[in-house]
Amino acid sequence: MIALQGIQKYFGANHVLKDIDLTVAPGEKLVVIGPSGSGKSTLIRSMNLLEMPSKGKIVVDGVDLTAPKAEVEKVRESVAMVFQQFNLYPHKTVLENLTLAPVLIKKVPKEAAEESGLAFLDRVGLKNKAHAYPAQLSGGQQQRVAIARALNMKPRVMLFDEPTSALDPEMIQEVLDVMVDLAKEGITMVVVTHEMGFARQVADRVIFMDAGRIIEQGTPEHFFVNPEHERTQLFLSKILRSH
Image (cartoon, rainbow, N blue to C red):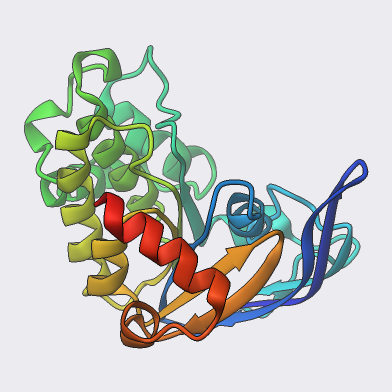
């Protein structure tokens, strides 16, 4: 579904991604962990070309996004992203936030977009907030709306960039519950997170990044029970101790 080949990314002199090779199979749930500044967000943002690699090739759903004249917008229609900040339009209601992209980008009739939007709001437990404005919702509710908005584009891939890091601790679980539920479906998911319980529960594969490289990858079992790399062991011992 996603293939990254020989990806290098520089911000000025800062070498942020170093020779990344990674494939994500259709339906796979991939969780990316690692310390701050390891390149996780840049990696996931490059998967829909929000960050253009300095070198290398990115193929999503059979389309080479890095080719000249690639139909990047077309691919983005099937690759939805959920950010740390919810990025909802404050002057539009929850339902309007959900219907905007399907109507404008996919040319879905407004009624159909509203009908599916309400169904997805129901899935994230917020159908009763359809006519509220984002400012009237808690952070956890806003992030659940952002997930419903992503789902209303009927994506084949969902990218999550630390979706719970801006939330108060008691709101984190409500968002993770929605994501766990989502993971039971056939959708391809790539999740950058510090939530180790979620990684353990949901991931088919976990990758650990440090200093712009993929240091180690494997099943959650391998990772949490028997990580090989010293750097991985150190990171996990710190993070698991703090939870």
